[in-house]
Image 1 (cartoon, rainbow over the protein chains, first blue to last red):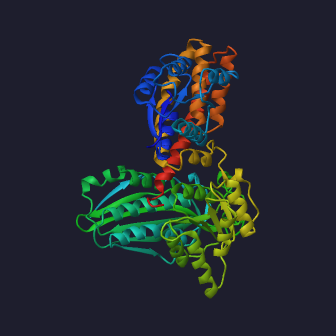
Image 2 (tube, chains in turn purple, green):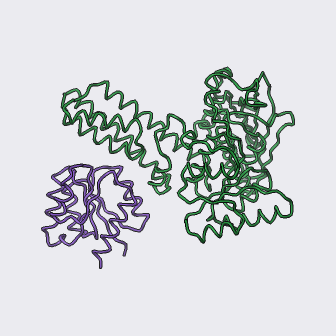
Image 3 (cartoon, one colour):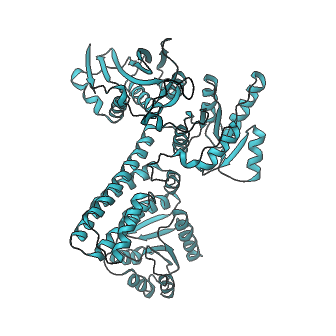
Length: 125
Length: 438
């Protein structure tokens, strides 16, 4: 079974680039463009790993992370946060909330794939 | 017989704007038409080339455009011809001073084009591009057609007689001379690679150095090209379909053992392992570089193989270039279709975000300006870190300090973005001009 990744991001170029290339590398990709969609899809489809943008419409990404970690349906799914914000304390704060990883945008595709692949694999093991 | 003309205006030679790289007309024709000959053979069609003996061979001009025109027109002829063949004929129309005017005729034995469709065919993608390139080269294009007999596309282009030496009387002064690349010895290079993106990258890099480039899509095609013409250098991908780079090199070296000579072969390998290096050497390759190939490594290796002075990698790129193509191609995984989709999304987003930015600036809302400028920085960053990126970064930084910027700053950004969009369009066009199978 190919690892299923949920990309929650409202940047259409980022989503197009990642979903195309991840599919080419054998991932199954699901996309959410806002926080509400992200929560819905996470609960319904139970992806192996989630890539979450912290700044999306429809609420706060931090709240979405908290809710993902609180729900029994999704708390086991590793969440990698991607953000263009440069607040130096953000990565630590997010990890304290249960994020599995943090990627500072702009980020190369190779780094994203490596990170998502590793967490999806760990979750499956 | 009926005739349709497009681009009736012919700009005077002084207005020609092209990069006057030196070219051998006959080699250019042979190299450009070789892959099309394969396509013709597949349809059991003849492809005949005739160059009148009074047509000079050593010319200077926009070789890339001429190649593209030929590819578009001949491809079109092959597409619409079921039996018989296609002929490409070149005649000298006139020579005035340094300017040579050549007349090309691409005739086929296809179905012909009804009179009322003759103007329309120039609206198709390939022929429209050809017509505009012909115009850029100071020429005209026309089609003559007879139903059930065939069509003949005729076009003229203007080229320069190649200068005899660096300061010869034919080297034009002014902007034309200013764009002439640094005097690296011009080489005729065969690039053998089955990846279209590698070919595009290598070809664009080499032609900007003033070299001429022929392309082969496999080891077998490389051997075919070498049987027809002489090259100063071969850049050979190791992994290719049909016949890989190692087999092709071995065949070339074996042939040279009998006939003499030694063409330098530069290998491109996907792996940096010692064994790969050893394998390349054993096959008879002179040097190797690892993929993804950087401009600097490629130019350095070529310089050392051909004993030419190395040119700076940055000099190979036009000064206006904002995009680091190598990084971009790598990031999209060498997928031109993905690049195309990203460009479309980018155009759409630019329009949307520019509206937001103008609104925020007009309202003096520094927070909203920063937000929009930040978004621009992100989306421009996919393509480049050049001037457009810098303009967005400055807007964002100033807005964070409370300066909501003014309309002029937005215009600046908008101008830089337009330049970037033009460059993206050019990259996509270059990709289109590379025929399938490359």
